[in-house]
Length: 423
Image 1 (tube, rainbow, N blue to C red):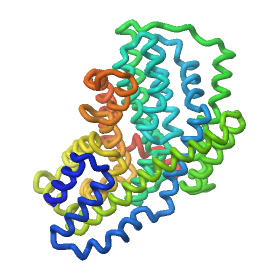
Image 2 (cartoon, helix red, strand yellow):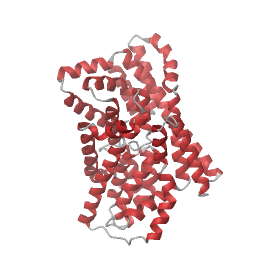
Image 3 (tube, rainbow, N blue to C red):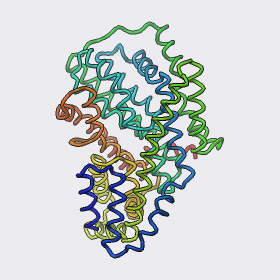
Image 4 (tube, helix red, strand yellow):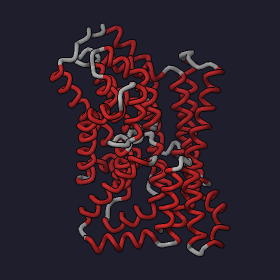
C-alpha cells in the first residue's frame, strides 16, 4: 500500500483536488500491484458508492440551510442570541457561541457555519473591543458544533457507511454539542472578566420578545426533524425534504425569500452537493482497494501486537483521526477509513452509535486543531489576522473540545441515554 500513499500524497502536493487524487491514486495502485483487471470494476464501485437513497439527505439538508441563510435566518439567529446574552460583559463572544449552536441545527456544516457567522460576528466582536484573533478563534472552534448538533451531514455519511441508525446518531450528538457550547461559554465568560471586555446595555423586554418571535420558527426545525423521525412520521430522507419545505414556508411567510434568492440557494446547494458526492464516489475506489488488500485486517493485527487494551487502542484511534481531521474533510476521512474503523470497533467492543459519535467528534475537532485545521484558515481570512495569532487564541478552546471528547469516549451513557430512551 506504500505506493498508493506515495502517489496520493504527491497528487495532493501538486494541487490536484482531493477527489481526483483519491480516484487516480486508487486506480494507479491497482495497476502497479498487478490487479489491473480489477480496474474494470471501478466505474461500478463509483456508482455504487453514491447509489443509496439516504444520500438524498445531503443535498436536501444543504438546500434547507441555504434557503434559511439567504432568507435572513442567520441575522435573526444573531439578533436572538444578542437579545439573550449580549448584555453580559464581552457579550458578543457568548453571542457567537450561541449563534453557532443555533446555526448548527440548520446548516449541519462546519465550514458553512464559520463562513456565514464569521462574516457577521468577527467584525462586530472586534468593534466591541475584543482582539480580532480571539474573535476569529472563537468562530473557528465553535463552528465544530455544526456537524455534531442535528441534523448533521457527517452523521448521515457515517450512518450510511456503517449501518448505524441515523436517527440515533442525530440524538447522540445533542449532549456533545451542548457540552462544547457550555465549555466555550464558560471560557468566554472568564476571558471577558479577565481582560475587562465592555458591557453593553440590556435590551428591553419587548425587544427580546420580538427577537424570540422572529427566530423561533427557525429554531424549532431540528425539533421537527428529531420528533418526526422518532415518531415514525418520516424517514431521515423524508425529514430532509420536510426541512426544505419548511424553509421555503417560513422564508415566504417572512417575505425574505425572492425568486432570485431561491435560485442562488439552489446553485450553491448544487455546487456543494456535487463536491461532496464526487468525493464520496471517488473515495469508494480507495475503500475498495483497502478491502481488496485486506488493509483493515492488517492494521488490526498490527495494533493487537502492540496492545490488546481497548482503551489504549481507542486512544491511538482518536489521535489518528484528529491528525487526519487537520488535513482532510470529515466525509473523505469516513469513506477512506470506514473499513478500518469498523474493524477497530469490533476489537474495542463499543456500541455502534457511541463509536460513531466519537469518530465524528474527532474528525470535526480536527478541522479546528492547529496547526492546519481548515476552520482556522477560514476565520483567519475573514478577520485579516495572521493564522499564527488565531492558532494561539484557539489552543485553549480546542482543549475544551478535546476534554468533551474524552468524557464522551470514557462515559458512553452521556451520549446513549437519549437515543436509548427515545428509540
